[in-house]
Length: 247
Image (cartoon, rainbow, N blue to C red; front, side):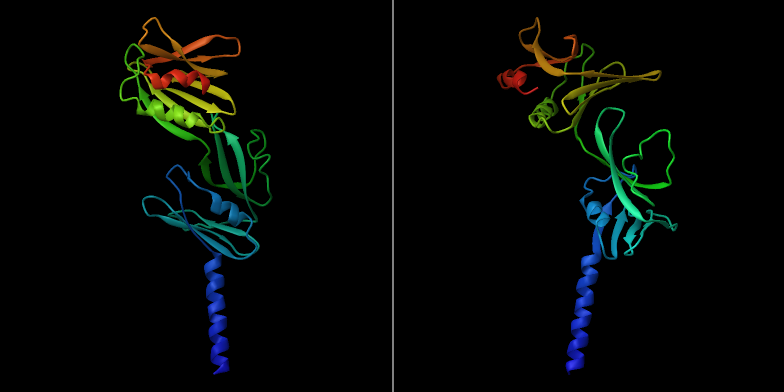
């Protein structure tokens, strides 16, 4: 009877240990993006064998395992396995000035050098994590007037009250290519593209300025030299009158 109880307790302990080593499931998009990477930080600090299941939105699965010494990656939908000794992250900015985090495996932590364009590293990319809020796309008329509804603009200003939040806002003119406005670390970045060019400019302020039409405001970027760059006009209900204090 005592042996039976001891065996049962050992079995229960093994089950608890196995459950503790299961890090659950991480969903990775087709662009290798994830929304929340907190589990990867936990796995990078693991000191016992642990398993994280990887899954794509279309149902393909893979795994990222730590055997106590090395990490083993089986990408979703593949049978190949890649083995490295270190799991680490590296922070950077994309072409639009927006922050993101990249996760890699390598044989040493090269997070401080992974974005060096000169040096090649033997590293396996796992996923990317956008660190900004996407506020959607505003549609403009041929006269660069904001088309209703105005909910996205209201949402943009509401999020922007948190000056520590990185965010983006796309504008789609009736004619021409879209523009992307990004905010990060106190700087506004406007990116304009067409088939032959990619223009990125930086600005220090974003303010709604009065126009000749007393019923509208012009959302305008201003650079360090005081030069303005109007983006679009929009109606100014009373709730917008406080905007200069928050942008």
